[in-house]
Length: 396
Image (tube, rainbow, N blue to C red; front, side, top):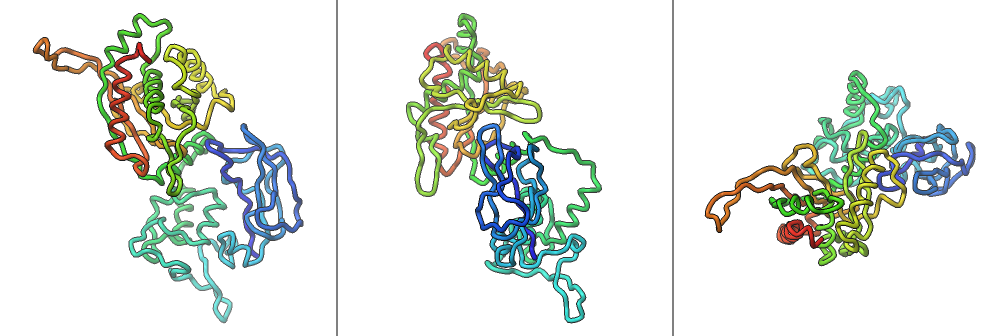
């Protein structure tokens, strides 16, 4: 009978693994679809892993009090062909020794090779690569914890260029010949977030901003705010004036934010963390300096408290710290906007009063946004307002 894997699901944004707390059923028990099977604990909450289909619990591979990454196989369910099909498996999954020769048996019992066919909904004529995945291939990928993005470099030999199970197994065999290292849980989490973000049409606009007023303000301010915090506060004020650009499109509705909570990117070991300043529009720039600096240090040490992450409506990233003048960062899946700040540099600026070029310190501001929610004009006006506010740091 078909065996359906029990997979560690994605339990929340930026959660890459969970600890096994308790088994709610035991091998041999009969379960139904969506029944709670395993209790797991993340750094945010205790949750449950449910059954992908009905059947009998064959075995649990997971161990109590051990941590497993998202996508890990925790156990197996022996299911009927009908239930296996419901979970996205073909009715007759191959034996492990037959993974490179999937097919059916003829009258003499000889296994025949499967010819590429289209089952169910037709494959679009322009389909190519991993744009269409059969249920059998999806199940095999789930078993290995892979997504469609991992097959972007695989040339399909099936109908309309789709990737067949044979293409997939050859790809896996080739990978095993290469040097590989394990991705950290943070890297896996970042990759998953970016994969989901990229399902939307992301557009970018940018413009230069003069930083001379900010640097002059820093000379007299105690304590001194950094350019990234100034950009964060300016974004918060601009969105407080008009929160529509930070809305999320869900179906045919724009969901407006209830609080101006702004995140900021902090590079940590093998990844990026995004601590959040809550109600950033309600506090003055000078009041944000201490909590901002504290969150930066906690993020670098990977000791952020649970309430300091998630739920933000936009992110600020200072890619100028790496010497970059221009970049196009990607908004987080639950956000519409990400504001970027490039490296400052001296640029000639025409002074109409003096009638000559004078040097100024200038940096590029970029705004990446979900084009379904914002058009270029609205994004440009928001960026213009942020630039105006940054030129008046004493009023922030």
